[in-house]
Amino acid sequence: MDLRRPHQTEEGLIRLWAEKALELCEDIDDEEALAEYLKPVKETLVALNHDRRVLALGGAGSGKSTLLALLANAPVIKQCAMEGHYTCWRYVCRDADASHSLFFPLPSLEGLELVDTADLASEEVRRTCEQLLQGADAVLGVLDARAADASPVWDLLTSIPPEARTSWLLAVAQTDRLDARAAIALKEQLRQLSRMHGVQDVRIFIYPGEATDAATNTLRSCVQELLDRPQGLYASLRVLAERTVDLVQRADRTLSAREGVGRMYSGFMAGIEQEIDNFMHSQMIGLAEYTHGMQSLLVHTLTNMRSELHRTLGWALSPSTLLRMELMGGVADQAIYRHMDAALQHMQEESDKQFSAQCGTHWEHVRPRMKKALECEIGAFPREALETELHTLRERLGRQMYEPLVAAGIRNRLFAIFAEQTGWMQRCIILTCMILIIAGLLGSLGHDAPAAAGVLLAVAVWGIGCAIQHAATRHICNAVEQLVSELCGASEKQFLAVVEGLIVSRMAAYRQLYAAPRHKVTQQESELRPLQERQKTIYTRLRILLQHL
Image (cartoon, rainbow, N blue to C red):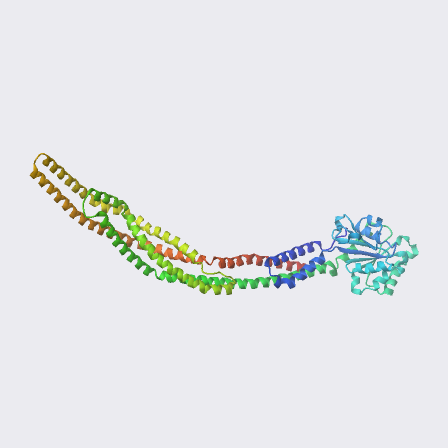
C-alpha cells in the first residue's frame, strides 16, 4: 500500500461547498451581517491548506531516515545528508522559508509532509522538535533496539500530555543487530520501559531487520491509522463543515430578511400602481362627459362646415361654381376632418393640461413616501417628458378619429352628394350659353328685337339657375350635415374605443415615469431567487456530508 493524505474525497467535497458558500456570501454583499460567521470558515480553510505532517524523532543512528524512506518508498530520503535540525520532504514546497524543504516528486505523497530530524539528544534539536510536534499529524518515535532504554524519545514522550500521545507510534528499528537472546527479551523490555515512563497507551511497532513488503506495509498501515484518526484531519473537516453550515444558515436568515424587505417594497409599489389604476378609473368614469364634449364638438364642426360650404359655392351659378362643386366632392371629407381635428386638438390640449396637473399633484404626494419606503429619490416631477408624450398621443388621436370615417366610406358618399347637383348645373350653364350665342347671331344679322329677347331669356335662365343653386347649396349642407351625424352616430363605439385607448395610453405614459423604482424592486426580486436556490443547494449538500462524517 501507499501512504496518502487521508480523507481526500471528503476533503475535496467539503472544500468545494465551503468555497461555494463563500462565493454566495460575496454575492449577497452584506459583510456586516455575515462577518461573524465568515471569519471562522476562512480560518479553517487556511488551516487545512498545510500538508499532513509525519514526524520522525529519535537518537542518532536510530533508523529514522531508513523508516521514512521505507514509508515513502523513496531510498533518497535515507541517502540525503541532513543540514540543520530537520529536513522536510514534500511533493510541493509551500513554506515561505523553504531552507529545510526538499522537493520530492512522488505523486502518492501529494498533501503529505515527511519530516526527518537530527539527534534528539541535542537540546537545540529538542526545542525545534517540540515546535514541530504542534503541527504533527503522526509522530514516529524511533527507538534503537540496541539501546532502547537510553533513547531520548522517552523523555520527550513523557513530557507531553496523554491526550497528545494518540498521534504517536513507537517504532523499534535496528533489530537485526541484536543477538538471539536480546531479540527474544526485546518485547518484555519494551513493556517495562513503557510502564516505567508511564506511556502504556502508546502503540509499539517492532520493525524486523529485513525490509520485507509485509513489514513495510504493516508500518505504513500503522502510520496511516494515525493520520486517519478522528482527532486529525477528520475533525478539522467536520469543524469546517459545521462552521460552513452555520454560515449558510446565517446567509439564509439574511436572505429571508431581504426577502421580507423585498415583499414590503413590492407591496409599496403595488400600492402606487393601485393608486394609478384608481386615477385611470376616475377618468374612465368621465367618458360620458367626454362623449358629450365630442357631440358638442360635432355641432361646432358642422356649423363651421356649413359656413365654409356657403362661401365655397357662392351665390352665382357659373362654370367656376361647377368646377368647385366637382372639387368639393373629392376634398369635403378632408375639410370635415380638418375642422374636427382642430376642435379636437384644442379640447384635448385643455384635457391634457388638467391631466398633467393631476399627475404632478400625485407625484409630489408619492415622492416623500417613495424616499422613505424604498430609499429611492425620484426627483422633481418630469413635466416636460410627460407633456412631450401627451403631444404624441394627441397626434395619434387625430389619426385614429379619422379611421372610423374612412371605414364608413365618407369620401364616396360625400362625392355622391355633390355629384347629384352637378348635372342640372351643367345643363343650365350650357342652355344659357346656347341662348346667348343664338341671340348674338340674330343681333349680327340685324334682328335686334329677337336678339334682345334672347338676352333676356338667357338672363332669366341664369337667374333661375342661381335660385336653384341657392336651394341646392342649402340641400347639400343639410345632406352633408345629416351624413356626418349618421356616420358619427354609427361610429360612436369606435370613437369611444379610441378615447378609452387615449386614456389608457396617457396613464401608461404617467406610469412609465416610475420605471426606476419599479426596476429597482424587480431587480432585487430577480437577484434574490438565484441566491436562495444556491443557499438551499449548499445547505443540503453540507448536511449530507456531515452525516457521512
